[in-house]
Length: 111
Image (cartoon, rainbow, N blue to C red; front, side, top):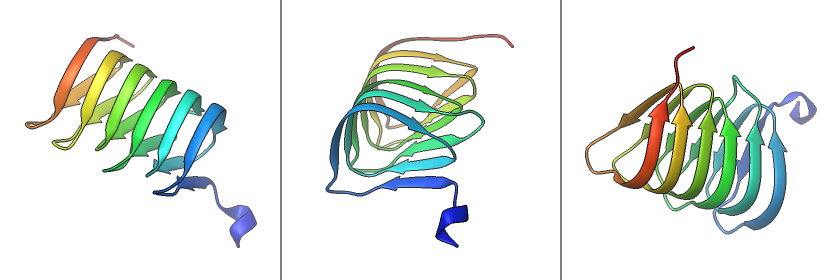
């Protein structure tokens, strides 16, 4: 039943600006700007074609699209070959796959 679902999907042509709080796995295909919080241990996936300009606080993060801003992750951040990332990343672990375009200040933090 739909009322029992704990995920969020933001569509390809959606443009949102503001302060957002998500619970459960979140998939972003559109454009999202603002302050974004995804409750850990939930994961957020910035899909191919997505554009995100934000301060993003999350658990695990997978980036396939474009991101500008600051990422604060208590989990693993993976930048895939289609990713374009500009900004700052603080994460438990950071993986940058060949082909990803990055212009960032980043560090990992011990548990």
